[in-house]
Length: 83
Image (cartoon, rainbow, N blue to C red):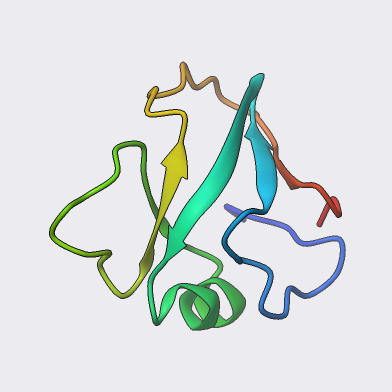
């Protein structure tokens, strides 16, 4: 299994929400129109670590700071309500 939820997400991805990815902290700045549906049904999203002037892709979120994280196997992702 690639992902596990402690509880099923429901419209979890919203502008201004903070989350951590491994040891890095981010704030959601933009949410694509299909990002929550993809996350709820498929358990996946695309995360852009650089804000785009061209608009957000439907299944993606854009976050700040614009710093790509150093990722390690087993790193957790937590929203401030810890899913």
